Amino acid sequence: MKKTERVNLIMRYINNRAHFTIAEIQREFKISRATAIRDINEIQAMGFPLTTELGRGGGYHVLQNHYLPAARFTPDELKAIFISFIASKNSQLPYLHNRRSITEKLIGIASQTQQDELIELNHILLFENTNPANPNLLELDDSAPPELNQLISLAVRDKHLRVTYEHSIGWPQLMDVYLLHIFNSNAQWLVEVYDFDADEFRYLPVVMLRDSAISEQAMKLTEQEILNKKRLRARESNLVVKLDATGIQRFKRMHPPGISLSFTGMFQSSGIFNVQLDVTDAEELAYYADWLLFLGKGVVYDRIPDELRMILRERFTHFI
Image (spheres, rainbow, N blue to C red):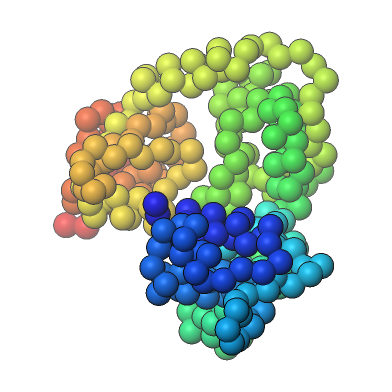
């Protein structure tokens, strides 16, 4: 039996008793005295309400009118949750305003020793978005756009939405869409949708969306038909690129929205992605040329539009 499973079973066992001894735990779970003591100490560290009675016939008492918290975490699990909160601080997360109350609840279920450790971790660990002068500072002005919370709440109920897209101030566009993904790319929240009226897949900045709601119209296509369209367009991509390990690391640092990288080698040593480029869009081609050069010398083109190839050649000539 694994340790975590055994500790959980012991907690359930003692939760139904007013009093128990180490010997009883030994017999019930067929473990040594040292193991039983270690498990009980760990259970106490989780905040289980126990008191110790010394002397002959002594043991442990479960405090009356105290209940085991609904959520139970080992010390390492609690550290992992707390560290994830620190690491994601000021990262444009949805529901950021709830972070303080969640943190207080996590601290509340920790023992005093665990609380001291978590507070110390907050001072020791610094991540990219942490303010070193004040690790406790939470930059609420860096929070995700307000419409993001509304989109998430709607999407878990129904992905067929009506959104208002305001590409320019004063020029709103009402759109009937099917939501595919919500993601963060280069510090910006984007939503991938299928636009029923334009019959195309689009990536819309969440910050430019207004008044999102579940659509009252009938869907023109089923979900499966939309996904089939996306797969078909992926197969027809005019740019197919293979990356080495360096290219993969740089891809993770920066890439255009909507591109999915498929790993083809062990330990993420190589990968491939495909894109359908609009060869008539000079700005898009110039952007991709610069980005592809950024990915490094290990880039291999399985397929590339002639228009993009010409721009890359010009870039190489300029550097030489």
